[in-house]
Image (cartoon, rainbow, N blue to C red; front, side, top):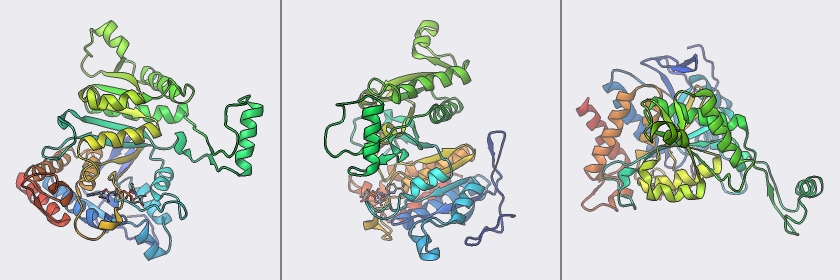
Amino acid sequence: MSSEYDQIEVPDEGSKVTYEDGELVVPDDPIIPIIHGDGIGTDVGPAAQSVLNAAAEATGREINWMRVYAGETARERYDENLPDDTVDALREFRVSIKGPLTTPVGAGFRSLNVALRKKLDLYANVRPTYHLDGVPSPVKDPSEMDMVNFRENTEDVYAGIEFDAGTDEVAQVREFVEEEMGFDATIHDGPVGIGIKPITEFGTKRLVRQAIEYALENDRDSVTLVHKGNIMKFTEGAFRDWGYELAAEEFPERTVTEDELWDEHDGEAPPGVVVVKDRIADNMLQQILTRTDQYDVLAMPNLNGDYLSDAAGAQIGGLGIAPGANIGDGRVLAEPVHGSAPKYAGQDKVNPSAMILSGRIMLERLGWDDAADLVRDAVEAQISAKRVTYDIERQVEGGEKLATSEFAAEIVERIEERA
Ligand code: NAD
């Protein structure tokens, strides 16, 4: 292996995932970097590794793990939060997985999760949201939910262009907005904080492209652009317009709008064609509850995506279950939605399903669909058997409470039995 790192060890065995002509090229023995993460990361990280190893082996492959460090473990080892070696390894080896990293509220450092997404340009946060049999849910029929949410990861009000009340900067911005741009009597008198919401054509189109490509590759029926363009016409409205424009420009034969669907196809999309539609974000939050099965792949600006993917996640069982991944061009960093839950850290107690199912996304992105299906089916069978961690056990009748490691070990057995 040619790579040179001061701080981390590259495994002796295994090969590199590469990226050629817009596709990941994956060997049967890839080197995969893993960050266990802070807090309960020390519990769910090893649990997920054991399950993913079993699924890889059962399908004739081998994962060569490369431990890399960020957050607390990096501070202990190297006295820094996010070593360059870690970022370089995630960049070089392309497909990786991480557990949660703690972000102190207020003072301290900025989110390492955000820093990683920025440094690696992982511009889409992708959250498959589907129900596993046996997982308790607050809705009547959680099985209707089978969505994949694509949330833009780099812009919108999360761009970090914010000015604190009382500073010279905010006074300058206010003066510019009021005097140069003519918005007088729009901002109330007195202290004000101001944030700027950039939504670019570039940022929108690459996100929507990824969502449409995913829908086409996975035989999904529709991609819905979720926006608040009725109010924020030049940001959210532009997101909608650029989304439709991208579909028409780059996928003219493979996409139709809802109007075209009815005008030209009597409401029935031809095989291999995805319907591109749009919904206002507040309405969409109702629709995911009331017309759940009509939605499939969603593409959203950052803030809408944040709210909507959590709301959707609650419908299928919440944080212990919800998987995710951050995806850029030729790079994947899978990670569970949940945080580091410090009060449960190191207790071998929490649910590793979200981390394991994030690993499932990683397997799918490696092109190992057979291994990914084994993982899903084994987790579902385990939960259906009511042999679960505390968070699920307390919600189901007749369940048996298992430790994180016991739960993972039984999933491994199920994979080995099925293989
Ligand atoms: P959290 O997700 O860590 O925990 C909230 C609660 O959810 C926990 O107390 C627990 O009751 C439950 N929970 C979470 N994961 C679970 C699991 N696997 N199994 C069972 N129950 C689980 O959210 P928080 O308390 O708001 O955040 C704690 C820290 O995590 C903060 O520093 C935050 O910034 C960070 N965080 C990191 C990420 C990330 O790394 N991507 C995401 C969210 C939060």
